Amino acid sequence: MKTPRILIHLDRLVANFECLRRRAGAAGMELTVVLKGVAGDLRIARSLIEAGAREIGDSRSENLHRFQQLFPATRRVLLRLPSLGRLAEIAAVADLSLNTEVKTLASLHSVVQRHEVMLMIDLGDLREGVDEAGLTQLARCCRRLPNLRVTAAGTNFSCFAGAVPTVEKLAHLAGLAEQLRNEFGFPVTWVSGGNSSSLPLLYRKELPPGINHLRIGEGILLGRETMAGTLLPDLRGDAFVVEAEVIQAQRKPARTEGETGLDAFGRRPVFPEAEPGWRALLNIGHQDSPLNGLTPLDPGFTLLGGSSDYAVLACEKKPRLGQRVRFSPNYWSLLSLMTSPYVYKEYVED
Picture 1 (tube, rainbow, N blue to C red):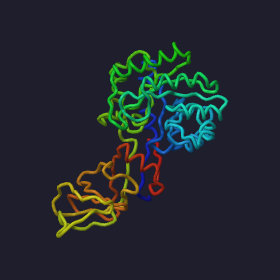
Picture 2: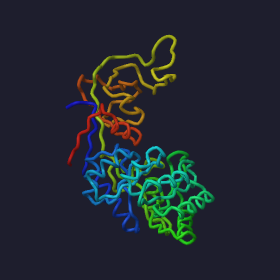
Picture 3: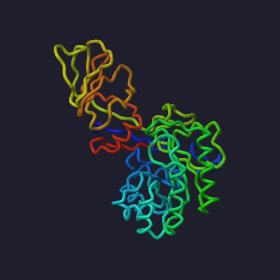
Picture 4: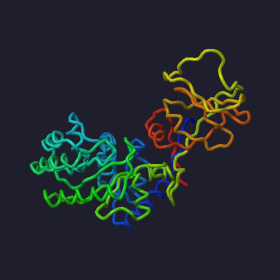
């Protein structure tokens, strides 16, 4: 079997989705299944849609186009704000898009006959979203654009500034959504309270009234909430397993001798503490995945670092050429692994 490869356990992903869907349903909520972390993988999409996913989201219109071709009955959400140069393409493949700019909305209106929008409000993550004055401006604009329907209001947490979702912030979001209904007459059906960082509030049954939607990627893919990376109850954290092969096994000193400079990426090398001894070179590197996003699953291996093509591991005993070493990826690593054409994908039915 060729390496490096990533083993994708489809049944474990389905189990995570079904668990979260049950919890969301009990709270009167809907989920958008976010697939940007797996580069819009079609096998994963099919498994989750067959398990009952009714709406899928991605940040790349190319992936939405593929979803449209294969799963035309499933709603598609563009999660990255639309770019002016691709509005016609976006209008053709997305049922709903996230928006924050008056000019973008006006331009989008000119290329669609009917399109739904989610107005994004910044509640502290300092990424996409407007403040309250900006929301009023967007609402006034949309009222003059009959081809656009404001059916959702949303926010985001823990992606840029690390803002934590709280009951108070989400109650404020629900109040702003009510304002869009009452003052502007918009049919705001969904109030989207963020991403997997909001799952602990769902688990504790603390989401405030009016919040009825979440956009969930990491919770389904890796079973984790995103504020602390904690595995959530009843979810699987082992749906993805990375394998790479030992291609060199040599004894090495703990440190190089003499003067040192920058490494291949322009950084000053800093290594974890390790005794002189056996080192394994593996056929995976930063071009495939940020190596600090990989955690060895096999005992006796410590990841020291690597370069574009190699991972360097300290080994408690002599490794064997051709030996496969397994890793668990974090979200950043998973994103790169699934995007890389150099990493083989193998689908597993448990």
